[in-house]
Figure 1 (cartoon, rainbow, N blue to C red):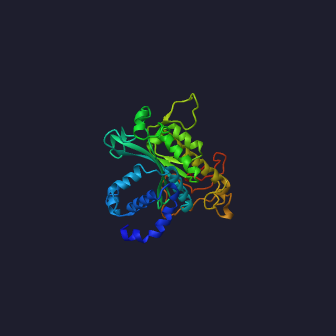
Figure 2: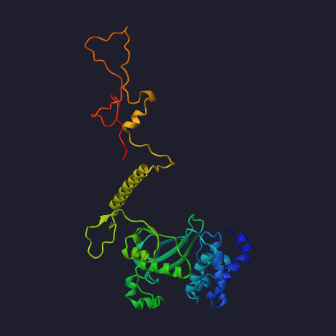
Figure 3: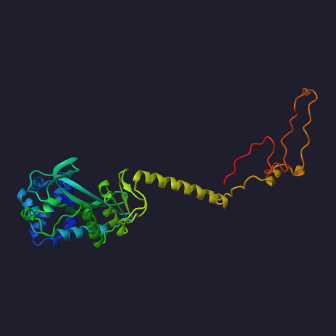
Length: 347
């Protein structure tokens, strides 16, 4: 959006931002929030603090202090965002996306910075990791991040003096990332924001405690898993009675099992005459059915031999073939005829 469009939305934007006014104790931070949001909506090529402040005609240090040292209620603003999503975006199939992101940093003074895998750089790097919860509509027309929590590495947790120097409160301790994600789901549910489906990447699917937490909350989910993940198709309990299989083998077994069940169900429907389309399936071939194929006057009586053309005598020693006739003797119980190929019978 350009500046003219942003200015034209001035009254509506002001009314929307007023919903967050109780998150600030003074009017100065409220004004800084409005300037920061307008910068995020603008067409600036870089939407960091300095370009936004220069475009708004204020000193960059002003916005830096707003984000770093100004006192405002982060938890209340997060809850308000989730409540607005519930009020204005009531989706029939709401999807929750759990993911973490790494932000490369230099030095050791930034809170929570540590050498760990960074998705942005694709390698072990000095970075800060945060866990995010995002909501999306089924058609992805609406998406919004509704929660974000920094991940405190265990090395920071064990060095409380370093945490105090970086401004990390004492109640912020080390927690696995999947525990942080489950806490975010609980906070969202407290504000009325529930999800029909949860999805996450392969790292979360390998954590049994995360999967158990989703099942405990009766939460449906779709997760990416590695093909060589060792797992069971049932709850093995404390002492598994059989070794675990790979996820790929379990999926193949499940698919073949469903194919077998589908075939058995189809055959059962055939026997009940409930084939798709409402058409009754004919009975297996029988002697009575074969008899009804002949004209009424000839039922049960053999046909006479075919007349031979005298102009073409049959050479001596040649076997005379009789036409295909019903074969009603005791040696042929199926009622088929000579020279007739027997069709296989469905179950």
